[in-house]
Image (cartoon, rainbow, N blue to C red; front, top):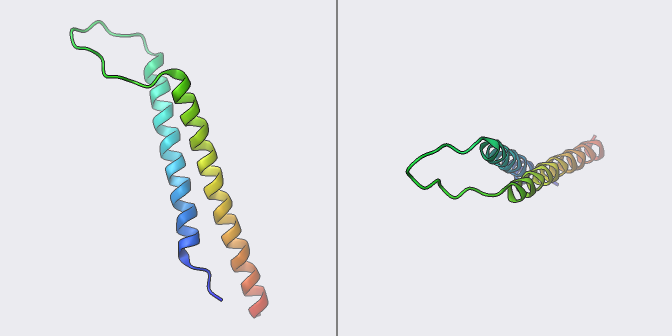
Length: 85
């Protein structure tokens, strides 16, 4: 029985997606905590603090879920190696 590499790549993809989401949310939080500059142009619409905090938590959970997928695929692969040995 083979473990498709897609199990590992799916987990890795979820971890990377979670990390990207956390980085973006952290950047939004940092950007929103800076004092507003006086400028003529209208500032671009940025997510509010609550939305950024929710995205931060979603990214954390997404990365944790991806790590769990990788752990499970690794355990299954280890079990298969033990059975074949």
